[in-house]
Image 1 (cartoon, rainbow, N blue to C red):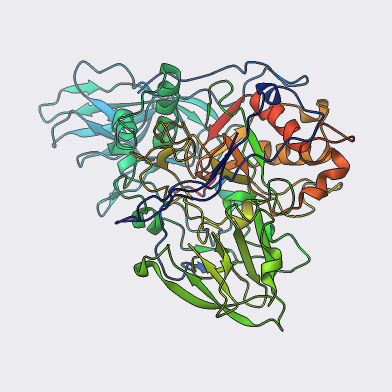
Image 2 (cartoon, rainbow, N blue to C red; image 1 turned 135 degrees about the vertical axis):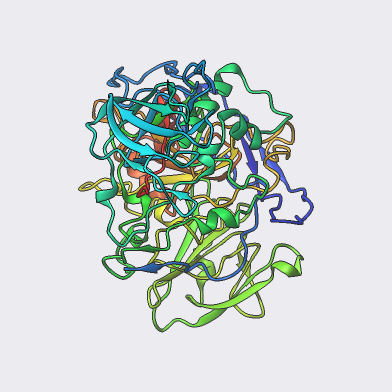
Length: 591
């Protein structure tokens, strides 16, 4: 296991040159991955040692309140009590239907397409003076006369989409016939739809739907995967087909994971984020988990439906897990300090090394002795979260140190204050640019005896993929061409899950039948119910962000094992490494 002590650099546009930092290497036996240990294991390494794209400056309070085969891998071993039953959603099939001899083809969906709420379908291979009739299960649904004959018509230059809410859950056959100017009638290929229930009703009327991305209907799977690939990376056949299946799932969902692929920091993706939402039900309080302080429309608070689109990851895709803790343990979690009304406003200074173009200073209320809340590993990433309940805002800071002149924090990167009256899709100092707060395990959440963790979890992964989906708007700089900065050899961009992607622990795994400590069960429940969001590149297979102290789990076997148990981290490793994992579609209010 490797502890990389600092990031190597990030930047949109011209980027700082990479710097060298100390690396501590700890050798650990592979037995750790398959069975809990009974002795204390050393903390591994900083999760955030990587190049990262630099977010643009400015206030983050945008918006207003009010082709390949499907990979269906089997785990190499399964913890006792797990179910062999696959989720209700069938696997994504990325190969298009057989070519139509007459060239008349339905475009915009890859059969079998798991869909919900609306679909965006047009045609190809036809002249401009045809009449197209669309049928679902041989029942006429729509007739179109304007090329490219969008099912449901267009408004201006944008397709309206066609609602599938009136169809029963399950499979349906979509076909079309074209009547040409000479009276000839020809038939299209058939696309199988797998209709799943919409979750739009779970969101407020205030929430802006996440719009369909037209390029999702215009791009093929090979085009998408090529746009976000590293030419130096040769994927295995299993990984290649899985990556294609994941891309196809997103395209069928109206999301192009390669959108604006030329830019590490994408303003295009940032502009697509919802502009309005329901306000939080209560103001931020120091006595409540700040992870739950955002809009109830936040995607992190919505459980993954049983029939949601998902693609299975290959067996043992994740073999190592690091539970980050702010104090004790690895000491590289997020320190948190919550201001009182009487605390002073100190100056936050953010500058990426000596790049004056990145300099940003602003006042923010915080405790005078805020440095006492810095994570305990001084050689780690020194992430800090500054919270001001008086203004319901927070600041996330990376590589935080004391500015001796101002008494405030110096930071390699700290975005301007972000409101809790938001979706949590902005304001983070991680590569993907969405907030860490709603995904971080807060003190007391994992050891709560009366209720589970009520939100998704997240962190960094070593096997990143340069693709991005909501809520991500950015990625690590140079991910498509850069070298792995954790081990100093080999390329990045070898993963199967995009930035912003959600990894779900097998929903059919019965955790109640496994011998687990309370904290391990709570964390695994959250990954099973709400998922794990990929936020960054790190030096291990999977890092789980938290602001908790390692001592919180001492009564449950500690983080790495003690006389009371095998260790929470070891329990989590055992389950995740031997269970089926899935990539699932974004939990958004669909157009």
